[in-house]
Figure (spheres, rainbow, N blue to C red):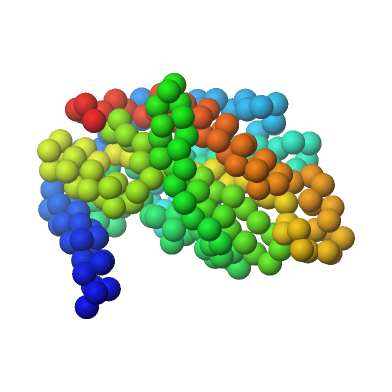
Amino acid sequence: MSAWKAWSPAAVLVAGSALVLGQRDQMAVPLAQPLATVEANFSGFTSKDLTIDTTQQKIAGMTNYLMRIFKRDTLDVMSLYVGYYDYQQQGKSIHSPKNCLPGAGWEPMAQSIVAVTVDGVDHPVNRYLLGKGSARALVYYWYQGRGRIEANEYRVKWQLMRDAALTGRTEEALVRLVIPMAPDAKAKQPEAVALRRILPSAAQADSLAQQAAKRYIPEVMRVLPKPAVAS
């Protein structure tokens, strides 16, 4: 009974959101600028935009996307994904990375919400540490749209439900940064030792993620449509 009480507010919120999104047509709002115009130059890295196959696009349901890999020499240092939904309703909405990130042997090891400061304003961002054997990866992700930047998924659902009812607008983007990290220090395999020399440590990965988030929060905001009302 106590478990149900703990989860019941979230269940009611999700059910209410599904009801609103399912019953009222939402306005499809185009991007202000193409996602491809998001600045590609970052900290001296080279970058390359990738194509997501049609099957994955269909599963994710995004209207537009940007998938960009940043390299140093020949090494993939970081990836940036922006998935934009011009409207959301049942069957077409942002999938939580909490459900999508674990897979192919990767497991969540730690989770928190960190602040990213842009122009003196703190923005909440999800921080995930993933592990696969001795391999590690750091993930930062957040939801951005209708004038807001949010990490808490229940708050995102509430805002979505409210805006759907008041303005008929539900456009939003999921922004995700992934940084491969140096393998666990306990791993003694030659390849793990070699990777520790070239991949960032935990502190270095967080520093890079913070720099990238500071850079791309305003860049993504620039290409998103202007909000209908003040947030």
